[in-house]
Image 1 (tube, rainbow, N blue to C red):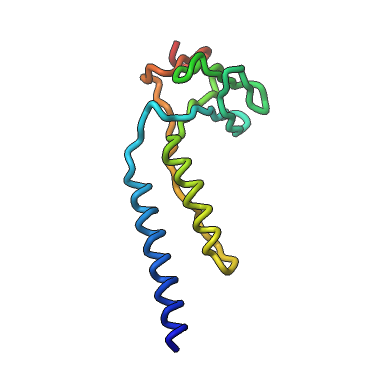
Image 2 (cartoon, rainbow, N blue to C red; image 1 turned 30 degrees about the horizontal axis):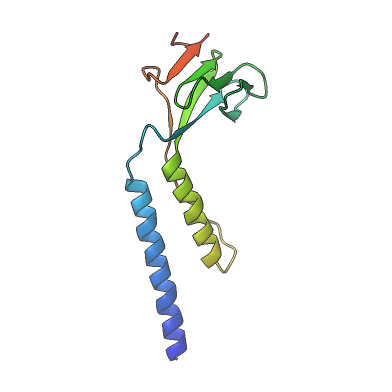
Length: 134
């Protein structure tokens, strides 16, 4: 019976640690300098990561590329610029690895959250062509 209790206590302790880490990740503030830019095409529902070379969505109506490490140009009236907080994303990947290691039985689960957002037209780090902002 002692082994069962200690196994139960260890499982409970690991669960509590994971919950604390999840809550910390959710509360973590977003650092604008550490973001990855992507774009969503409203026409074909494709999401594409920006690189230094211009990349297009599946239907070819939206595109985007970095002009330097922070700034990007997006093209197309159906193009929606997106951002992902790098720090939170990396931590979510690490947390998922911990969750996967401790998950013993198959289950339906949500996964680990990370911050992503639509970049507003007023952002100084983007330039829109054939869209709202010029």
